Length: 273
Ligand code: SAM
Image: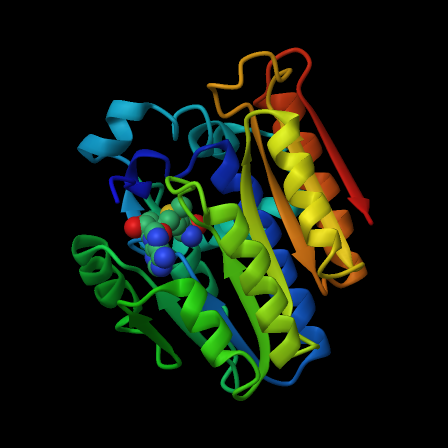
């Protein structure tokens, strides 16, 4: 467990993931009176982009700092930009929210949020991040197991799965968890984040997911052509139970990131299976 999200916070993949997550949360809230959000891989909940880890990677400079400076950022990024401003006390600052802070602060009274984090250091930070949020709690527990145990226990389940992909079985565990969640709570919505390095791995995952459900919305973002499988060349959000408006949000977010932050040959594609 070496992965620290602090190195990657605010990078192009976070912008894509967080803009789409907020759009999906809001669309689900319009349809369901109470949501039970389970963030299976929560991380610390919030990050200081002026800190050592973020500065060392430089990924936020190529991501959120360019979005904040852009004059043409589409409306899909506004909820994320508003959350950043709020976290920085209304000023321009270096704090960047992770998925826990973003979603926990967007809850209604009847919604609840559970963020799972296994690492001691990030679990401590997560507890502090969520402390001011009434309906949110941090759990130092395996996120895959928690999602299955909790699904269907009150409120429509919205499961967010965002592993570090350090372990070779992460892909298999996502598929197994999705299957088990949908068996317990057929109306559950899921949003799964994936890195894209090569097409074979991505395609194999989609084919495995198609054995679980025929209701997939895929938002694929390539920052550059997939010529070097050792690099994270792009990322994807794979969603189940996503309302139609999420498709428009994914197109807007992906197109802007691919054209403004990508290299020649970068592109975004959104489709339903
Ligand atoms: N979702 C976060 C966000 O968008 O702000 C980032 C999460 S980061 C990609 C993945 C996190 O999952 C890491 O902090 C890692 O320690 C944690 N983790 C790894 N395996 C886990 C597991 N089985 N259950 C819960 N957390 C896990």
